[in-house]
Image (cartoon, rainbow, N blue to C red):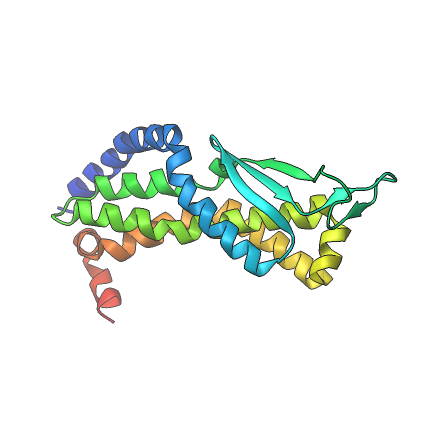
Amino acid sequence: MTQRPLQRFMLGVLVFFPLTFFVWYVTATFHLAPVTLLSGKLLNLLVPDALMWLKLDGHTLVVASNFGRDASGAVLSPPPGEDVLGFHLNPLIYSYSLPLVAALMLATPGKDKWGNLLWGMLLVIPAEMFSMIFSVLKTLTFDVGAAFQAQQGFSQAGVDAVALGYQVGTLLLPMIAPLIIWVALNRAFITQLAPQLERVFSR
């Protein structure tokens, strides 16, 4: 009894994921815009005076720092001239949580499918923000380097925390967050597949 729903679900994920991935890629500018806006505001609170702005250029994240090089090549803040240290980052490497959670929701049977899809897309935003924020922090910490660390008063523990956050945000969170969200929103279907989990969910 549980094999057929499980097989249909797995087949649905295989069918829907290429479609959601395609839509995610071609609409990157739109779904990354709120993540970029919110991440930029939070970064200005976390590391004040470090960023001039954070913007999207298509699906590329453009980071303009508040640092520049003087004639001797030393990095200073504020920048001595109009040239600032800027970076181009690829947010797509950690934002694939969105098409994954969409495929999981669309493949799950139930009357709440479309509501769960909307909730899943909203709930994945904090995970994307975490990944984007630590991607920018990693760039400032290691590519701008000592000038940024001194400006923000980072200790070695702070540098290590940024490195760890970046690894979590790029390697683990994009895969784990959609699964956690899917489980949280589809308990009835999961207990149908594995009735022994009903006691766990009822606690």
